[in-house]
Amino acid sequence: MKGNYLRHQLAVVLTLILSGPAFGSNIDAIQRYIDTTVYASLPGFTRDDITINVQYPANALLSSNCSQTLDFKWRGYPQPGQNTVKTACAAPRWQLYVAVSIQAFKEVVISAGPLERNKPLTSSELALRRMDIGSLRLGYFDDPEQLRGYLLQRTLQSGQVITPYIVKAPSLISRGDWVTIRSGSQGLVVTSTGEALKDGVLGDQIPLKNLSSDTTIRAWVIAKGVVSTKRSDVQAQIGRGLQGTVKRNNK
Image (cartoon, rainbow, N blue to C red):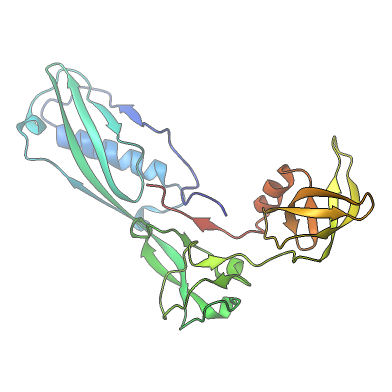
């Protein structure tokens, strides 16, 4: 599954120097910086989807003059949830930390009703609900259709968020299946037939018996009944959306 819910990542440390001295407008400068970088770091959201709450410390430095441009650094990078921005002035030298709470709302997949464990999911059993993804620490899915056939690891009540930890991708290959083995290099694709020695989902590397050479090899599952000896083929299939879209909060 795709590892991250941010479609666009800023640098691990975001730095922005605002032009012109602050001279008593520190709060305004800090707010402009926070707004600018938060919206830039969440390109998949509109401004109506984002709520920013800045908690300024009770500190006299917020109203003190700074003869230099203010310097800002995020601790990490801005993402839904709790964040911290360091604000510093070079002359006179001072610094303080500002707490920033970010809410980002989008529709995520939930159970439309009670769901049984180990029963393949259908899109009709799922629904979408608009939620703050910063509160979804275990991740989420954003497309019910891409969960079709997935198996629940436990029983769910109506309205529960579907997370990567409670679903299992359906097996594309079962032990004993005859499968097509893709191999080759430099644009030349060679196919052969093998027997799966283990079940496998998309991206799994499983052992197989090559029926032509009677040897045991390992290859990656890339589609139903198809494996490849090239790991790059797995990423190509995932890029086409065959694995579903999952977002995780990596904070």
